[in-house]
Image (cartoon, rainbow over all chains, first blue to last red; front, side, top):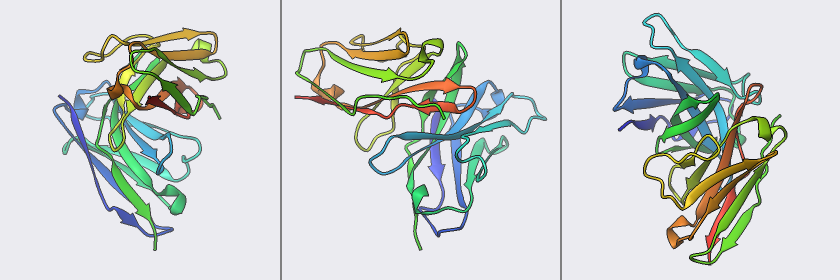
Length: 128
Length: 107
């Protein structure tokens, strides 16, 4: 059973960079074939996809990324296969970035992606 | 940007059928999936590829797709089915897109 666990600061100051890490257990990122995603949920609101990184499983693959157009200028997702982790960096944060952040594993079926596994989510508050 | 619209709320009596719709431009040419989210919990995939159920999801959950509307149906609704439900599709220009969400209340 694949499990994902988010970690990182729960409080970030405005204009700074939000950094979160997702540790994967029960499965290897380097086995390839899956999309490793970040999704957020503002308090009391719906789900917003942030982006994902796809790792082919090749030793030399640093991953291919795809970001939400609305966040693309501020987002970076990377993978560390040696630690079986992937990470999110969101720069220049404001109070509007306060949300529960989920990491997730998506699988492609018939040309679309769906989330098979979710982390438990971590609340990040942006405040001075 | 691509948007998927759901009704804010649906009410259903125990044992009855609940239907949740999801509408979007050109949704007819895409697959949809559905997630259930209970308060304080992470979402759970209940339907993928329009109508398929992941392992462990009860048979009372079903999905269908007609034109630009996808529908999640819960037959014989139980109190434990009270939750928020989100549809999701994938678009090449915007990536994953989630619906606005529907709160299903079992009265």
